[in-house]
Length: 248
Image 1 (cartoon, rainbow, N blue to C red):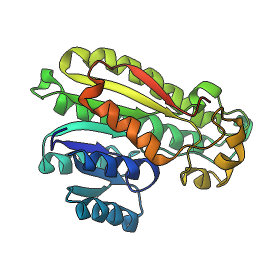
Image 2: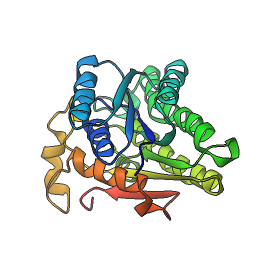
Image 3: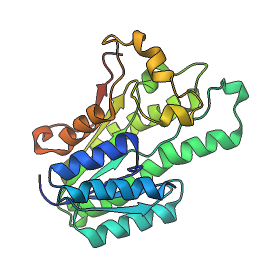
């Protein structure tokens, strides 16, 4: 690893927080976005700096192109971009499709799909050898829901992650000859706060018996997989989707 910058969206909690700390411990300078929780963002920066790492936090709603451009400008001032982790995402409350509002669906797609594509666009502009860059890695966060469909729960979320799978494959092929690798992680049931934001904080633990490994995963386990994909150990991996799901 080098001291190149990694941008992590949604880096103040859960998988994003764990990834920021793990990447910093391996030499990356961390520039992460956070939607609203400034106190949580400051805590991540302090945790990284306490271990002699370097980190900055930038308020960024990935549904806003203006915010995304601001995040990347901050990273440009911090150093040379080497990686992007498209982690920011939302779920909605448990609902059938025939109960969903257009506003819910539009917000879901704006954050989970459009935001990731726009962030990748900006990363490619900086990292692609076609644009004079030095190469790099893009890691997208998908979900096992993309395979399972999440019926009666959040089909819209599952659909958004299915789009991320397709985007990962296509973009990976598009920039493979330009020094950029693109991959995705499909987490399974992970013990993070996202379930609470969907109105069902105990969901992961309640469904744990359905997992072949009979337990939920941790944010650190996902972060370790992300950091591996960012490393030279994964130098021949692109357009790949890795399930980190306990076999689910």
